[in-house]
Image (tube, rainbow, N blue to C red; front, side, top):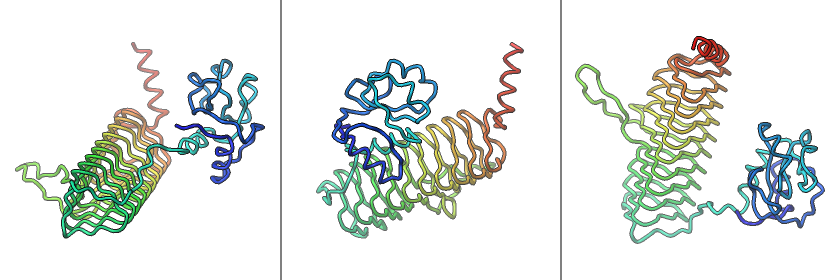
Length: 328
């Protein structure tokens, strides 16, 4: 991250309706943003977790994003920048001078293969060794990284960023999505008749809602007949498996190595911890949190927090863990 002025920080937070209070000069410059422990006298840091409260005593940073109730814990060498949500402020500031901002330069590489039956709109960048198949439409300002394979039966909407070595077929990717390297979207799912092992042909597609992010080496299988769907503003981590006909709502947060079996319906604002497994044909409500390494075998109503295997209310799970520890 490049050097940033306090004035830039203040303007950015104000634009995003984040109230900020500090007596720091607008011309004050920070070398970078670092953690409490690693920050130097030239850096900006942030405090958003009480477990690091004792670390504030020895902080070396020039300034700290912090809630008002904790500002008195800072030493005199570190000036407070008071915000209601330091982590949100950090997230916004992290995008200042972002070096990973991939924007199309409008150049289609001579080493890319573009089928004549595909349709490309204005200002599209396609890097070397990509293949764009027939029945593929790519809209304005799309970036496609090297060695990616797009199509057939694909629509990529405006401002999508597709990193290297991505495969997309039988899919609609809505605007402003980010597809990280190695993702596989729209392939045939895992389906067959159990007695004879006769393979079931999948003819559906994948739909990914706008402003969503799909992590590296994540796979999202096409539906058998209809659509596998990911909602808007959803963030899916690396190495996640989403099977055919799964439906995931808006604002999902799914950590690495989660597996969701076929035809499970998941609501809005879901949070799923790493390595959790979810069985097929379940209904999981809105605002549900599933702890890491949980095994979900039954439907979960709205606003529940579950953990363990088989997954259950997290308070019941905690009691069982304590009870079992005494038995040892």
